[in-house]
Amino acid sequence: AVAMVVEELLMIGARRFVRVAPAMAVAPRLRLGGTIVVLAASATDGTSRTLLGRQQVAPVGDFALADALVQAAQAAGVDVDVGSVATVDVLPDAVQRAELAAHGVLAADLGTAPLFVLAARGDARRPPDGARIRAAALLWIDQLATVEGSRPDDPGPEGLLRIALDVLSGPQASGCLSAKVDAGR
Image 1 (cartoon, rainbow, N blue to C red):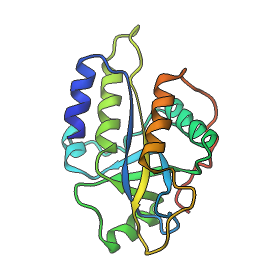
Image 2: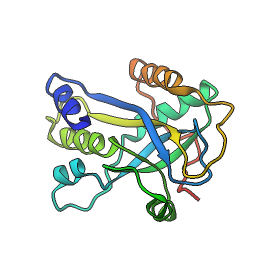
Image 3: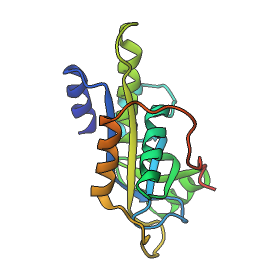
């Protein structure tokens, strides 16, 4: 579903995408309501594998857009983790979550990798004088790897949508990623 929507938006000229969606915690330290800005997504889902063919790549988001999301979240008082997710067709069981966590994956979601693949593909095909195509993802933890409580500072989906809209409607941010870049350790 994500791929179809992104393809259609690219056809009508969209150039910046922010996925705001739920994810399942893979890293045991993440809490319900936690927020992740995604830098890369393991393409373990069928859609991404179809789009990539036999290429073994981890699709990445746009660094400047991810940095802008981190800065906007921090300005809104939201603590964020920054790192990678695994995009899956079916949420992982306990054994699969442990394997993903051992590789530094923070969470599992259902659509970030196809977004990153299609944005990168569209950007690679743009004319030299065309606008860059950028994509990022802002996820909230709605399912836990372990059974523990929620975070008191949970911004909820509405708060994260507000952050994403502020970034998309504001000037393009650049500079250093101001949150901790987390390899899931």
